[in-house]
Picture: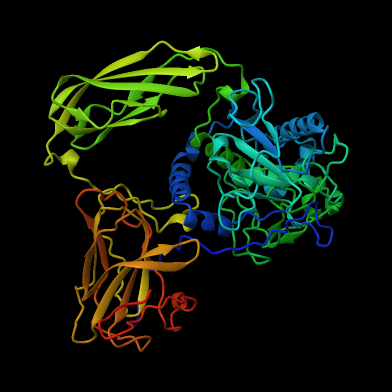
Amino acid sequence: MKKKKRLCLLFVFYLLSILDAPAQSSLLPPVRCNTTQATTDARMAADPAYRAYVEQYRRALANHLSTRNPDCSAGPVIIPVAVHFNSGVVPAGQEQCAINLALDQVSALNAEINGNDPQNSAFANFTSCFGNVLGSACVSFCLAQYGHPAGYGLAEGNYAVTFGQVNFSNTSGPGSSVPQDNNWAGYLNIYVSNGLGNLLGQAAGIPGDFSGEGVIVAACSFGTGNLSCSGMNSSASCSSIYDEGNTLTHEVGHYLGLYHIWGDDGTSCSGSDQISDTPNMGGNYSGYTSCGSHNSCNDLPTSCSSEDMYMNYMSYAADICMYMFTSGQADVMYLTAQNAGFTTATPGQCQAPVLPVAGFNHSGGTVCLSDCINFTDQSQNFPTSWSWSFSVISGDITTDITSSTQQNPGVCITGGSSGILRATLTASNSAGSSSPATTDINVTVLPDTDPLCIVTPCTQYDGGLYADLYSASACFEGCPTVQPGYQVWQNEAYLLPGLDGGATYTLDFCNGYNAGTWAAVITIATFSYSTGTAGTPIAQTAGCSLTFTPGASGDYIAVISGDGNCGGAEVQQNNGLLTFSCTGAGCNHCGNTFTDDGGPSAQYPNNANKTYTICPSNASDVVTV
């Protein structure tokens, strides 16, 4: 019997057609949102940097929920905001009105995310079934006024609101309608467009990574309804039930780590948003407006054996019926903002600049050869540029660089045994440049045989919040042997994401394999997660073990075929136990999810929908992948 350990897939392919209409479509009913685990997985698959961010975030979230400060006594975490209107959204002469509209919307977002929606008092009627779970995220948003990126026509003191200056066709990933402009990294970017068809909003991921993407909302659902601008679609102009600006609150909830409250499982009760104090729900309550008839738990509709919390911002109810987050949801949003690097200090984008005071720390001077001393800027008063110099003032050490303009550079030790490295930083912003800050670092280079220079694996993630989305991932440094625990089967593929260029990897199943039973051929090829297709083969062997070195970092696929058995019956014995390992320098990633990606036999569920051509095409065992 074929036995396999099921490992989580890194992605689900998800495609969405977006109508490029000049105004909101009236042919279809509005769709509240298109932010799901599927769209997040698709972005993770296509964007290694985002995938690494999400993996780090999930570990941090599981480990640090206990650090939440529930009474917000230290003050809120503050996030700067920029609002970008697509071309054609704001008529000429209405720019100031649109800025006022943005200010009003951000003010409402602050109230809603911190438990101050005027309708909150209604929740007191339902505490007997839900508990006293009304949450405040202790997060504040400020519409930025200073330190703007160049090229957008914004002077110091102007609000960070742009009109047609961002390319909305450059999106954050597959299936995403959210633009990405890297110049606006470090902000919560709110993109507003007329061209979303019947879609009201979407976030760039769960969570977002503040890399210049953000959330997008249809112009017809942007704003609280308190203001309107002549000739401009705004709140309620696509439907009267989306009239309070709650589409933005919903999408920001996603961007700060929240899933749909019903678990994106249709009307069943199998899905979950992974939040302990939100009840399971068997539906999304799209466009629901009947909340006025509910005054107690006895009045509420039910599903999944409990009352439905349709009034949660992460449902699809009409704006008039959405007014709360739970405490658990608030905890996640707070920690997401904190993990992204935001603090209780007012960001430089939200206060007039003053002269910086330079300062920094470093990772220490005891290193292995080729290790880097990492410097972390701790300058005050929000510098926007940095000038570093590095010099060896004694000893025989050598370094790879002598200067840098990065905020947080690394200086790698390329030779020698000891010495003193002098590091100097000058920080600058629009108010001027700081006095230099200088530190001398005593550097000791350890021998290769020192235990600190022998790379060992980091701790494998083993559960906690979002465990079912992440439980198969492990972080590797130096790459111990990965043994999934099942036998290889011929005519199957195995995904190897995130391999390091120049590192040496070995895929092996010689333990238990009998070449007399079937003749194995191993092929390694590049792989594209965005298209789900294999590319150019980089290595191949006839046998049960292949050692290979990728020429570049990226995602790869291993295909194991049987000579002369193209698509034929799979051998039931002597197949060998699969292992995967990395040795030598450069082994920083070993494929942090190692996935059996199927073969030709429909007998096994993971094989049914794979279409790789993995069979030898001629007698010399050339494999077309």
